[in-house]
Length: 235
Image 1 (tube, rainbow, N blue to C red):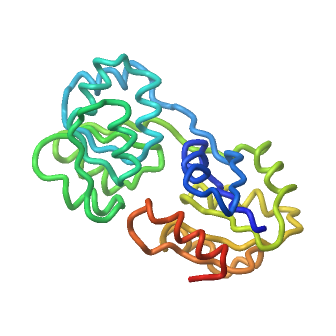
Image 2: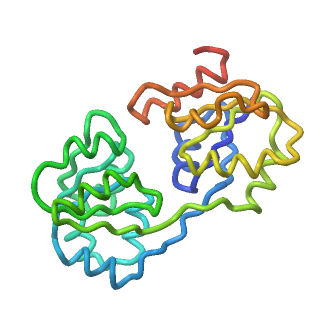
């Protein structure tokens, strides 16, 4: 049976494994989240008490690892989340938080719903710069909490386990960068599945993949169904 192989962080791999009983998921986190913002900077931004703009569940995890409970609540009690998984992470970290999610889930969508007034953007080092500039122009703050990097040891384990017909999941542009390392010396020729057309774009024409499909459903919660259809030969 074909396996689903996410090139992702532990959180995304765990979520996908929980959603997909079959086909099986090779849940070896290929990417790791490395905190980069100094804790005093994170605490100072949280103390502002401004509404938050949050670009990923990883941002919530890093904030929760740094901030005491009362500051975490002050930072996230009024939030705009990039998508439903980020909204769920905020709700887990701060029960009762008021969280808005735009109809489509991208940095561009966040820009369209910012509205007037200053906010704090909690994000990665790879944040879309147009979003960061918009937050700063409104008098807000941008906190680049972390970077995502490939775990070479995990990539080696994934490389040895991959077979023809397996489906490699590209969950972000960081996944695409990890694939550049993983495919070196790879004997298998797996299929590819990207969470969006934007993520799929750099992979078009990659000879290391036997095929490439991009999810266009918008709501990431439907992505596991998309993978089941691919694994079963559907579209």
